[in-house]
Amino acid sequence: GAGVSQTPSNKVTEKGKYVELRCDPISGHTALYWYRQSLGQGPEFLIYFQGTGAADDSGLPNDRFFAVRPEGSVSTLKIQRTERGDSAVYLCASSLTGTSGNTGELFFGEGSRLTVL
Amino acid sequence: GDSVTQMEGPVTLSEEAFLTINCTYTATGYPSLFWYVQYPGEGLQLLLKATKADDKGSNKGFEATYRKETTSFHLEKGSVQVSDSAVYFCALSDPSGYSTLTFGKGTMLLVSP
Image: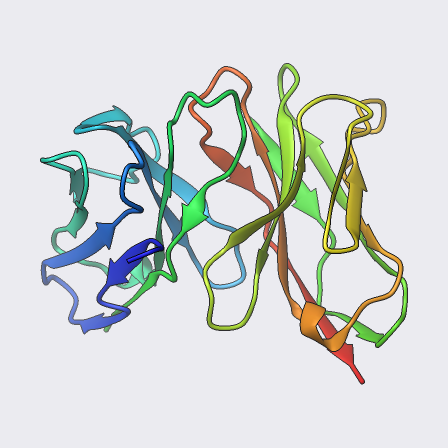
């Protein structure tokens, strides 16, 4: 597709369960980002991939969160032992290149809304 | 660390009114500054940007000027339309970083006919 695609758009799970959220970036974009947006807040950075490798994972809140991008395209954000505080919209974005001189042009998907009961 | 503060919303205006949404920032060095917009049911999209002091970003009738002396990047539009109703996010990127962005909390704009 033309834009960043995220699935599922909505996910409801129970506390303690495992969740995977998928992001399909724009074709040819080497940089991929995950952000989390809680209610009433702006997006908060989680992790950044350049190609297949995580160049910066400093925003991951704890070791229950993990993300992969094995072939340098699709990425999966994985959350283990979910907690109610994990409820948020998880946003994925991509850009042509991460070190692009601060163009700031990130292309965002519509997000995956996670609700942990 | 870097941070962005923007005025709380919602901002409610009538069509053709003048819009200002305030944004101030705290950062080391000289960040690039951005406004992103999120229309209902859509993903965030870049509205405008400025990469150095005194630069003015503009798009779709919106403008913002990078003011280093006041660490501000206020968003303005002379005449808003109903279709401008959205959530607006001010953001900055660390000049030494990887285009990761630090966002403000967002300001909802509601424009009535």
